[in-house]
Length: 379
Image (cartoon, rainbow, N blue to C red):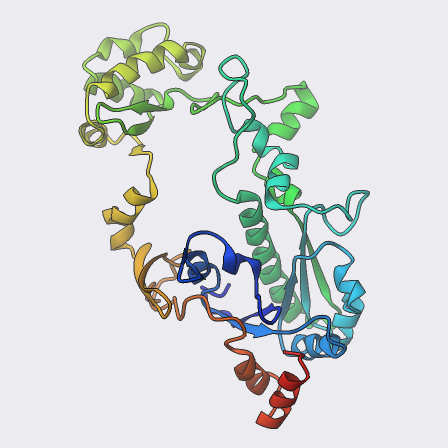
């Protein structure tokens, strides 16, 4: 929401700030992650243990459209910040609550991180190879997908809530309840009805797709992995032709998607031999000639150098006061008429960098009132 132009005020504890400030690789004690995760947000510090913290939070809440929190259920209430308190401060507020298990139910009080949501949401079960191939545990996705997906749903819920509040002129708080595991579970395609009706438990399939073939990664002669998705009959025919084996398109084992899936091991062996005889660039050039969806499996180095990403400013250079020039991902989605680079207004701010600014602009406090809050340890 900050990338798309919203004025996002991030509340952090004084001194140490958000834990993400310490994550990932650091340069001179500054986290490179924070350059992205904190961008376009204004940082305000509040000491939630201060006796006046509750009043200050509600002061700010009276001037905003949305409040987002991601504590374990009950924590806000311990601070005297229940939904009813927010509603009294701002009757048209949207309150987004993101937690491990949701605000209700027998497990609501349990703690949960993104990885726990990935496990409970069913995605972790599918990340790996079939039991007959490997007995290693299912692997994580390599990124905090549980946190990311929950954040997306929180943003969608917030925006939908604001639209409804404004359209209806509502004067009662709109509560949005997002659970990590539930958010991840929505990614499971048709698995739930398949299980409920047919008792089918989908199993991990490694790098291939169980319902479409060919759709797999194949190693090139220069050691890169090339993903090939030639699973429609016309695409498969074109693939066979550029492989120099047109007869495979009419082979009874491969003549349609159903039988290709049944004979996928042999099919993947044949395609793997062909890709393995070429460099990744050579294979991709041939695949592009006949419009077969394909890509090298990118590392971050590939992403940083990619012409398409660079042309669209999805990979862009940004000036950060702590690091100089750094690479950032562009804003998604692209909004017609807006300069994608200009949407990155500033990088991750210092702890409390905007406290005085927000207290003056939003709460209308003068210098003496701001100084008093500082001297008391509230901010």
